[in-house]
Length: 421
Image (cartoon, rainbow, N blue to C red; front, side):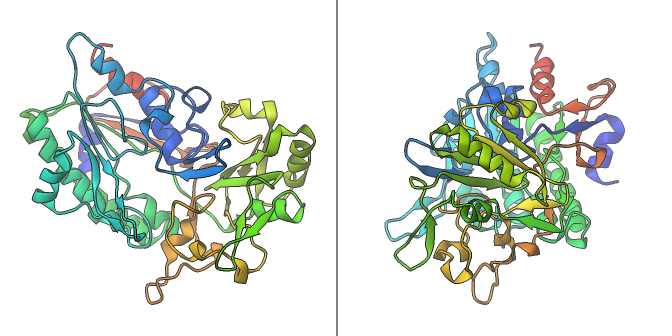
């Protein structure tokens, strides 16, 4: 019997409804705080820092989360419960007792050296000696595969034996890759499920043995990936409207000029934040009008309308664009591929003003990313409105959940309740 089926057969199972935006960083913050973006401040997989006019995708430290997380609450308990946090986004600098997460070293020549941020600091050296370096190249991008998730699992078992934490939170990324590249119903995506199930079996057996007895297992899928056959380009729409400005880079390509732009969009799967300079009401109205009724866009939320999904946080754009179920949003802003910046054809999370799943389709012969967004066949992020957009929550203990579907914000409460809190 598959490992997850075995767990479900003796425990409990519930549908898990992700809260908008249904993408990694906000949903993980929902699960670990029990709050929504309007309170914890994680409104996307990246942030636009208006004062510095800089975009950051994926790499922010834990202090970007503005509410207590599970490990913060456990640490305050008189019994001093300990926590381990393994590979969720935004975990660098968390107040957990034990941490491991990617943190490659950026060298002066532009290259990167493999490394992980750990607590205690010397732990990564021990894990590297036992398992080799964390295979970052297999964590995301065109070479993403089960090797990264396998390393996460094996390192977690080592940490469980060494530290025996009371709470262990792991992020296993494997199911994201094939489903976005070739679609959630593709043979590759189905194969990925079987690969993950095998590794999860190793994790369950390893942790059970490390602790001497089975803990309470809660296994959650953050969101569901849906098939897509359409793509939109919000920044090109804004540029054609005269709202987005560009400047030339040293290679002759174009870059968004954040200072000169009246509006531009940070895209993230099936939604985007449109940032309007000086919160100009007239420009906000123009932006909203440009996208309402346009193919591929289901909802356009301007100003106070963002509260519909608890997204009226100061980090949000003045307008939020939400895709239709079959569509997603790409960051491209140039009108001629000959004017694309060099980083557009590379795997680069630092300079792209948004998430780029086309990186999954690199040409391994030329090591170049094509500029064809129609290659992407799966996406997520739009509000979950049907059962097939829900994830699943499994428990090893019967009767954990009760009746009805659960929300991602319920996960923190379930964990804390297991500690009597």
